[in-house]
Length: 169
Length: 169
Ligand SMILES: [Fe+2]
Ligand SMILES: [Fe+2]
Ligand SMILES: [Fe+2]
Ligand SMILES: [Fe+2]
Ligand SMILES: [Fe+2]
Ligand SMILES: [Fe+2]
Image 1 (cartoon, rainbow over the protein chains, first blue to last red):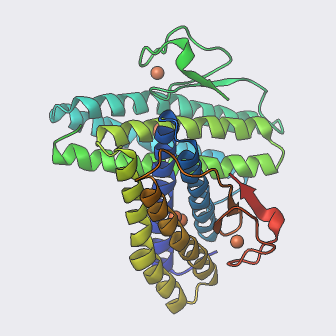
Image 2 (cartoon, rainbow over the protein chains, first blue to last red; image 1 turned 120 degrees about the vertical axis):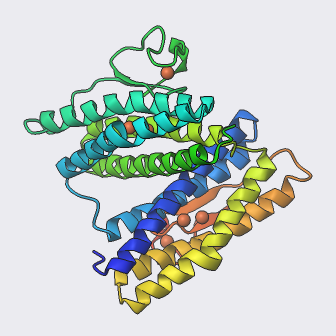
């Protein structure tokens, strides 16, 4: 694990850069697929995976990959920050500046993060007495990220998208 | 597209936060899979996808999803910055502070980014006269992110990993 502060700072920044590159390439890949450019999409997906490898190497060098319970705590804490601090403030600022697309984007995220925090906390609790979670289906709304177990709603309660817009995991 | 500067700034930060959350959850999912916790891994993968949806919404609200050629230019420019500025400086700093894991992690990334920039530039050139890239296999080293077309090397030229450690796309 890396010990010196400046090297840690740099690795943190590199983790951020790799995470954003991975995300952009995944978005570009999806867009290329929608345009029928399969091989170009595959190039972006492959390179997105290479950036995942880089980010994972930095993350491990930083000593951030913990035991499963620590990883669940970290996940819940990240969601908690987004629910209590980040998204309410950004949504409020977007409203103040009357930026409709940003209000929508922040609202969608905020609603999903509330569910995510609960799911991570429940998982943490359940795993105190079990080796793995129950085998429940998970559905995500492709439009807003709304997250739910077991069955697809007729209509997304957050964005109104129809049942076909849910992706099963 | 969002116009006010402060709302843009906030959305950029939220894009960064979502990208890092997506990355962390993907790393945690892989780790849970390796421990045989399939359902927990699925929860992390599903929520990672929800964060992808949030990041994509922010990215589109920022007006950053362009035409395919603009997306390729943006990809090449990101790699160029990492090759010419970010990784040489961070690698040099890690050497100065004698942080072995960071030197390794920066070196692996730097070598792969050089290949990525060329691949994106070549793709950009090729797509001037074609609708899609050629149907070539792409292989990525799971250890260092080394990226190559067509055939798996016997040994990764960057990290020395054997052929089995390559993932095909
Ligand atoms: Fe990278
Ligand atoms: Fe979340
Ligand atoms: Fe939705
Ligand atoms: Fe999110
Ligand atoms: Fe790259
Ligand atoms: Fe390698």
